[in-house]
Length: 361
Ligand code: ADP
Ligand code: MG
Ligand code: MG
Image (cartoon, rainbow, N blue to C red):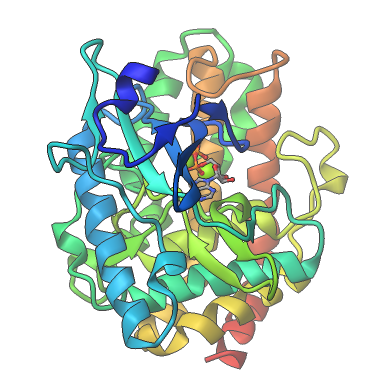
């Protein structure tokens, strides 16, 4: 790894990289550069090129968005070095380095005096994550989203996900379809709904936004002193998309108290209380940047992200569990069932969800 570090220009001695953080996608290391001025830390990351096939496009997205966020921070008098990630260019002025073995590496300045929380411990944490991702939307509202690369093509193309699901059912490679007819029917019964958001986008009724697509708590750095959500990190999945999708994915995994693969469905309940908390934070931070229709359709984001996930888990179960890692045989089926239970709960609460949105508009 020492060889890799020579691709950058350092004014000081560079430490051995030490594995850092709890990310699951990239390999992350911390390095320290010591000079007469003192010690300065950096984050070194090996980009996961199995997941991200176009590292050049990906880094173009990262640089575009972080440059934009830095300018926004300057305009509002915030510290630009702490408001977003800062890519350190290589000696050749490139945003990443491709080693002879094909591996791709990048370096960020370390954002000091921050904390990264691994899990939502309280409603307040969930609220703070909503504010941070809402701010991200607000700051990037004027970014030309169509210029971003789709780092994972068709990521939230729900009709395409449904077509993939239908193929998995038709092929029934593991002979499992007969036992899960009820679940298959649940997915098929909602076919018309999978088009709702993509059709509004295609008709020009919803704007294309910069979406983060991995809106977890551990992708926010909080100021150690003030507790304020400072900096949204992990920008690999930044893509053009719908604001409702970022919102919806957060609701999907955050607005319940159960494990994703909970087998006892009586324990799987969509929490209107947590839905309201997230909605409040997200709309307080981003509301003024959104159009009225964009706000009204946020519950669609929640439902469609949940259904999309459910059909992907079920399709993977039917295909023999190649995509989502499993620890036991029916894990993907259990995961699909929790998503369908959450969806059914959302349907029962549909009017109440709309009212919550209106309350914070
Ligand atoms: P992954 O895609 O694998 O989740 P991340 O980009 O989220 O990778 O980085 C993993 C962890 O490294 C983060 O959760 C955070 O704790 C830490 N981290 C990443 N970038 C920085 C940074 N610039 N400053 C401080 N910590 C960082
Ligand atoms: Mg991460
Ligand atoms: Mg990531």
